[in-house]
Image 1: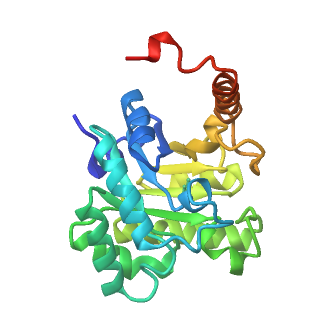
Image 2: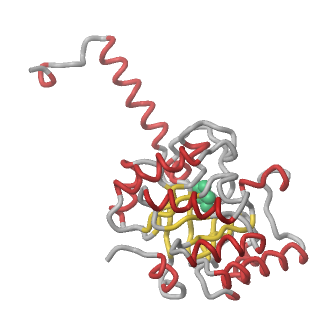
Length: 263
Ligand code: KIV
């Protein structure tokens, strides 16, 4: 049975919700075939795929293009598309129109960053049939006002704001909530105080699920900045460089193509 937003919401307290990003057909197939319930077409593709320094330059065109490719590779996971910077902030009608475009190319839900401020947007999206994944804590689209990639919610006041944000987003109708870059103890308190699943990234083990950027987990970009919360499960970037260097040598020295590659 394919995963839906309703099924993900109901998984709270029953099973750990394991999520990853994917940005194209090939990686989406890999993640889906392993059986993960949720694949996020993250605007982190700005860094991992498009080579930007942060997510702010990512456009609706980029997200539509990559969401469509991911959707073509997925049979079972819930495909969630990130709404890029300034595609939902200007007005609720703008958010509705852009979220609708993402669903038309294959997303089954959208993710937006921000707390209580986003309540009208979340209400309007959900009321119009678009499931929403919330995202609070470290919000990469707000690095200019946050002063960089900094852990959030460290003071009692800041923690209280995040707790309030989480409850407000739940009341507005999000089906789950990404908690990024907050102390593990606070993530545990938020998880216990909302009825929707929390999906942590740099938020400790007490969340209902976890998400990582696929390229970080696979070590696809050798030498890339690696936050402390990342665990690398492979060094595919280094392995790929060895394979490319072997191919180069084979061609240069006349070993490729060999008789078995010839017609
Ligand atoms: O863009 C992204 O990849 C995200 C994360 C939650 C992984 O927002």
